[in-house]
Length: 404
Image (cartoon, rainbow, N blue to C red; front, top):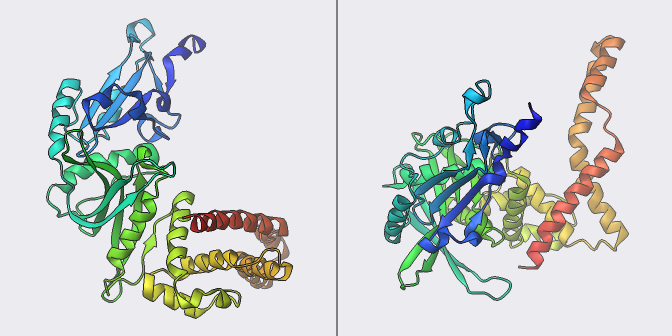
């Protein structure tokens, strides 16, 4: 029976089609389509959808205001009466739970909403305008970053539609509590001209930042969610967005430092790049000082000038020191590797000291069991593996710095 039903089970990632639609012509243009990276947060852990033949889910957004169309097509759907009560998955129900209210299921209605998109203007305060010229010498494109708070007129209904993209591209994504006025929002739009010469805006990326309280009268902004939509990736938008966030908060005297909540490897790499580019301009990070080791002067200058915390400053130091280390000089390269490995090994050295203290108070069999459970003996090979992974990440950051 199971084998006979296999053709009715599909991977949700393969049948879901997304679009950012600027014109009616985009609707029928396959080149404007893109897919999700995951769908388990909507369709369940195995990401499968059951009960349909030739299922195709269309989730289209108007490029500016993100008015939403949901189309669900299939050639056949199982009948419970013929399969012992087995029901097809409720696809629209699953999507209805996460999509913002007001989405349409009639394509003509969506086209009508699309026509109104020409009047869309970004919400909030314009903070930064920049241009991107493709490496292949294509046409230069203009982007703008806007700042909003929960009180910004009209923004929250737009944000309801925007945040649905998180489900397809950010693992363990959650919708934020917009009743909390400490949330702030940074949105990136492409500013372009339509075929009739009008100025239009298309949503490209966004970030949310929470202003945490810090005693006694300070705040610690924490970058929470960051997403660049697939059609706009590999264009440097995220680095520009992060720098704009910095430029917004750094002048505020009540800001202690700016942190990031559980960054992905990709975002950490962008953060490292932006921070290293900034700190490279500081006297404490000149090459002559980098070779002498990590200093309090570096911590103070990075915090005072760019509101970077101590942990991130240490990463920046290691990146910039590697950048100016002649790896053909065996002594210089060895000195660098030992410096980084000592930092990586510090938590395990601390654990060893704790274990020595435990040994004095525990019985031999209890101590042996404790060692087994916490894995106190960190091997040299594991430390070397950690280091090599880290150096590879650092080299990717350095490569980008050198090829800007």
